[in-house]
Length: 187
Image 1: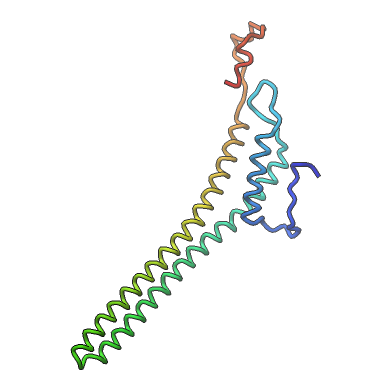
Image 2 (image 1 turned 45 degrees about the vertical axis):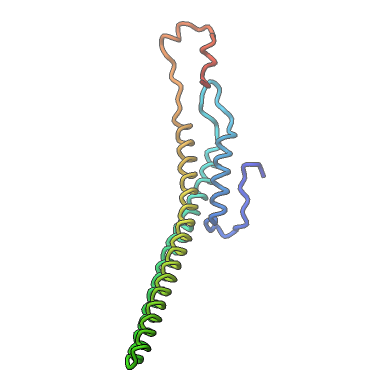
């Protein structure tokens, strides 16, 4: 086994988890950064099969990340719906209670005040639950966005490295002496 080999405890061939996807992407980045440079070129040499296998494994892990994000959005909607139903139930309970107390003025005032407090409390709790659910989903989506951004950067770097070609200038072919400009390729 070499340093470039990927070791997983997955013998069934299933896509890697999000943690494994991040690890694979980091390994791809390291592979590109540590690849041997081609002489007189900005290009590097990488093992195409190894790089391709690692990239395919990372891509296979992305659908799981998307499925988790969709699940979080669905869960948030369910939490908001439960909060709305609870608020409606509390409001209805307050309305029924207030109707029973209509006979006395003091009781009616007290019922209205209590109903308003219950409604305000229910709306506050529903808003708080909604905010917490949205914050949770936002954090998960931000994490997923970071992973996708890293994938895009790694792929872009790889593509840029594969696109670099050195083409000789016909005027420079006549002068075969090596001068200081020869070593300016890193500038």
